[in-house]
Image 1 (cartoon, rainbow, N blue to C red):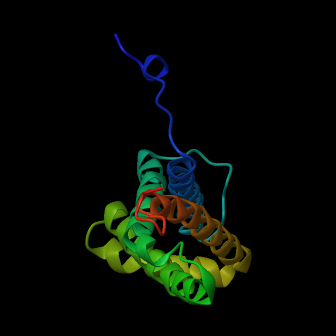
Image 2 (spheres, rainbow, N blue to C red; image 1 turned 180 degrees about the horizontal axis):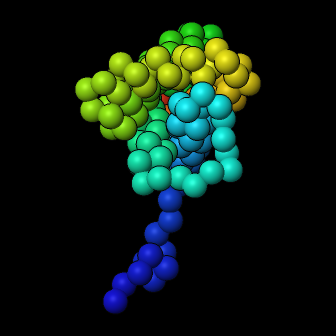
Length: 164
């Protein structure tokens, strides 16, 4: 039986960076969903027994955040000032797509509207969450930049026509 160790196959730095970007945004999305679901009752209660629906909403937050990053990934990870502007727009796209995806998964139909609304309220009430979300998306931008640079070197060609 062959395993990865026997074949000596490993992931590249770019692939690990892309995985880390998705993992980071999914973990923060789960934490943000946990915060939002705890505030739904009017008070933030972190020391309470979670129901199966609470677990589902947390999982939906993780999946929605990863889905939002997948949708907006093409705007992140570009060089220069133009890349920074695209990343800023990409962060808005990722945030909106993540909240729509998570809300739809958590409560189909009604949650599609409630997800973005609840997220905006959570950011408004607790601005540190917004700051951390921007930091996570900036880290995703830099990690995807590493992946893009690696992908560009795969197709780079020297001046003499020989691939690198």
